[in-house]
Image 1 (cartoon, one colour):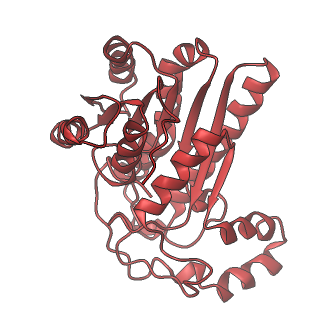
Image 2 (spheres, one colour; image 1 turned 180 degrees about the horizontal axis):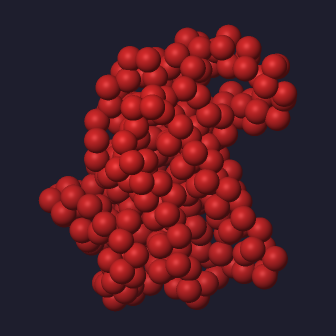
Image 3 (spheres, one colour; image 1 turned 135 degrees about the horizontal axis):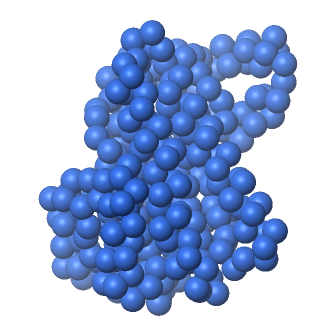
Length: 281
């Protein structure tokens, strides 16, 4: 199979890259010649991923690992400095780490709510604050937010998760507007995937799998990496999920029956999931 080198000379920071689609994206970027910094709260997972990439015969880049709590602004600033020193540059930032509670609103604890926003939303501010000046130094640079289709349509048992992802989408859209207004060379990409089969959303179901399938991690990673290479600004997966942006604009008396038809409020009924900051959906 022919391997391209679209990321030759590039250096990427990927949060939550110790496992899941974060690790898959790191492997793909390194295979195409890019250097990658594996950021994960789980130190063992981060180093295991970096070692596996560096030892792979398909790797054309280099990987370094950092144990980083992305909810800690001071820790993020230090990791950014260490990463730039280790890789020499950073021109790709991929905010991938995320968590989900999956509980009814009245069952959510204060700790769960605060943690969801700390990981899924506030961390975007800390990573971009720490690395945007570095991104600006390069002719081609991008800040990527892996949000969720839940950032387009909010459903039952996602009052914290959907709100955090709506905020993630809004943050990235506003950042894009600011960067374009100042004619910056830094672009943005917001990714809104439907449920991904990583274990984070274990137990979720879909009524129409042909239209709204539970996505395979490999497919999502491939599409995100391809979107970065091609300079896209928005990626919704699967493509049919983009209809949600139209439905969401309708009055509730019209949109809610459509959501009910597709069973969107029932998807989380059998949710079991798994905890962990390094996972993403």
